[in-house]
Length: 283
Image (cartoon, rainbow, N blue to C red):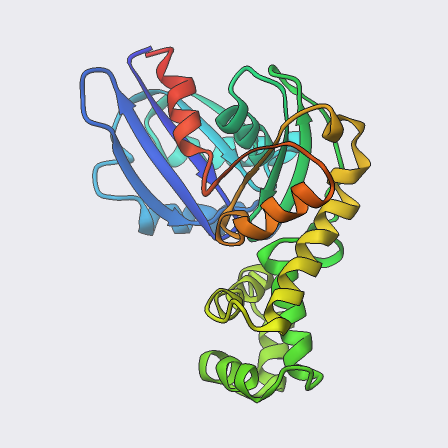
C-alpha cells in the first residue's frame, strides 16, 4: 500500500488526512457526518461543497473512515456508497467512532475507551477488538457527559431561571432570550445535538462559577455512573478519553478518575494522531 485516506468523523466535524509514501501529508476539515441524523443525499452534498479542490480525484489505495453512527452494518454500507462517489479509492473500510478511538488511543494494548464530544460512548478494547460496550441511546435518551448533554442542562438552567444574573446575561449575549425560537430550532431544524453542544462554550468561559462547576461535574459524573462504573474492566485497565468535552474539561475527568480510584491512561482532543501512526505502518 502506497497511500491511504484516514477520517475521524464526529457529529460536529470530520478530520481528514491523506497519507502518501514519500510525500507530505495533506489534512483538511469538513462538517460532521452521522448517518443516523442525515441522509446519503445530504452527506454527499456536503462532501461536494466542502472537499478541497483536487481531493476527489486524488487516487488512494484505501479510505479508512471511523465515525459517529457508523457501527451498524447498514450505515457502513450507506457511507461506503456515498464515499465511492466522492473519492478515487480502491478500497473503503468504515467503522464506528469507538473503534477509531480505541485504535488511536490504545494501539495494540487493552484499555477502557471513552468518547466525550458532541455525543458520548464507551467500550472495553482488548488490544485487537472491542469486546464490551454500553448500548448507545443517542442524543435524545443518552449521551451522558457529552456536549449535547451539557447543552440540555445549560438550557434548563436558563429557561427555569436557575442561572444568576451574570450567567443569564452571558447566555443571552450568545444565544438570545427568545425561548420559543430556541425550542423551535431544537425541534424543527436539523442537528439539534450540534445546536445544544454549541452552548458549551458558556461553561468553558465561566469556569470557577459554582453553578458552572456543578453542571460540568454532575454531567460528566453521570457518564461515569451510567457507563464506566458498569464495566468490571474499568478497575483492571487504564481509562482513555477523547473528544472536545473530555479535553476542555480534562481537569474534571481527571478528578473523577481519582475519586473512583480508576487509573487514567490519557486524555486527548482527537484520536487522529494515533490512527495515523497505526496506519502508517502499512505504507
